[in-house]
Length: 124
Image (spheres, rainbow, N blue to C red):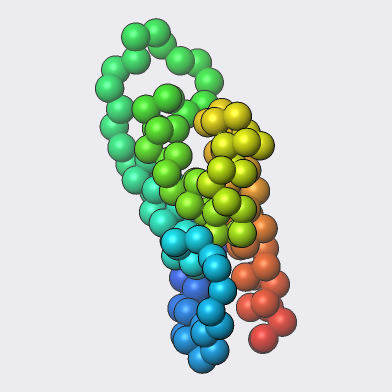
């Protein structure tokens, strides 16, 4: 886990330093891909460390509570939007369902990490 975080941090710094060399003017979401990935990563860490209120009914699974899902939702939407999908398209495709939005965000997050790791390995 520590290696993955370190690798991701290094690759993000490399990507950010190269991103300033040629900045094209395009109509993109408010948050760039690396920023959205970093924001989602920080949201995951915050959720992992957050103590939630005592549940009304005891949970037996490892599923996130509604409280923690609500904490992740804004960062998840920004991450999906950073891949070129509009916010209205996110709502249309998911019907506003938190589960679908979070699943989609995890897929985008995983794809970004795979691509970053692939690029890192090809450079070395």
